[in-house]
Length: 303
Ligand code: CP
Image 1: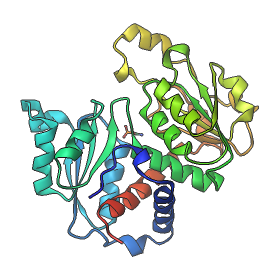
Image 2: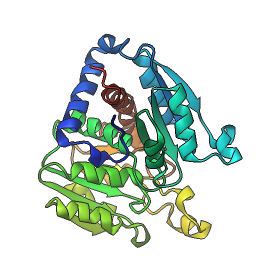
Image 3: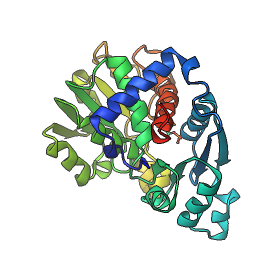
């Protein structure tokens, strides 16, 4: 039985295979409409979500399966003090696969160790968000046609941004990647993530300037400064508008730049940018559904 807690648990061959399955689902959805007949996905979300939970649920329905939903911790026995381990044991009695989001780093791993069915990490604190990375990979594949030879700018909250950490891990597996890490001093990428880049033989640049970085980028991955990760409201208010991508800032960008964002956005991309053909973030959210379909099939070992 396989779980997915960290994107690095998947080999490059497995990532490529998931991308191929997702592309086939896009081309021939009817082939997949009954693959999960009789199967149930439990979505256990101890933290708010729009895209991840609903795209997981749409994915299971589009595969012919059903869904058991726990959309917030307050409506479950977690509110009475039940542990993540006991919750996972219980859900194993009712469903075939679990997607779990939790504010505490490592909670989905605890669930996996106590579950008799596959557990997918749908985001744990500031740690990992592997299925967002699957969405990001399909976006890069469909928009750029390759995973090698790319300069990727990551901008915003690179300290707490779990999507950033998971994407750096995944893209470090490919060839000739340069990372441009654009953040305020207070929100720099943690050292353990930088080590992943250098251990893989890639280079990175750290900068505070989005404008100076823009001309070199093939991909710009914007992120939200996450209020929920700050202990100090004043610090959040000081940093929250560090970067706002607007149409003026795109003047020196490449014509084939791919602008990504895991969403939700707050202020960091102005709405006017949505009309730019390089804005891919809403397609990226759609691709997440197809990659989650491919992942559900893989973990349930359904061909
Ligand atoms: N990208 C993402 O994880 O969005 P949600 O928080 O809405 O699930």
